[in-house]
Length: 115
Length: 110
Figure 1 (tube, each protein chain N blue to C red):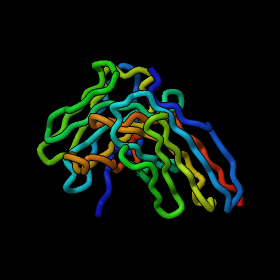
Figure 2: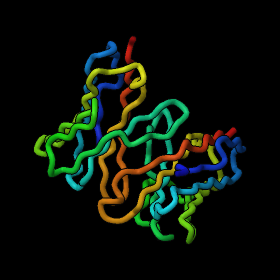
Figure 3: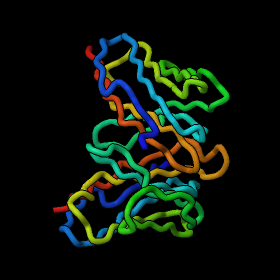
Figure 4: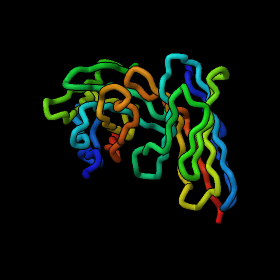
């Protein structure tokens, strides 16, 4: 059974550019969440999607956005990149309903470096 | 508002010893209490979790103890092995969101 797949694994972007990260959840999982991991702030929640609807959103500026497609694949976009956006971006998936929503499987992440 | 406080920041234990990591939370809306394990270059992996109507759960060498009134839960790793060397996160959950603690780096010396 394939795990959560995130692409690309590594990315280098310049300040002011925008970037799109992709996540393919485990087959059958309908919930996809995104987290940012940095040495200073740790793991912080960005947003969660279920059946193409955002159910919760973290405290990040509007430059961070996401979406989910009908096949449950998800993308997140960061516009007008800042140096502080350099981080490991993690995607996690779960079944998404009831107690089956508890217990997430994470991908290995996309390492974004902003220069 | 720091909702989740995890301690210690790091610990070193001898092979065969016991590792104990603690997590204190403030948000009484949390309704699921997992621990995640992360190795370098990988995403966190669910290790063990407990629901708030249970006080203890054991899976192999890993045990969660949960104290609802104190708003605390802990992870015990028994018979620690070098392969357990990793960073551990408590991440209480509600409303489709995990609130991660700062993490504990565990080093198991052979």
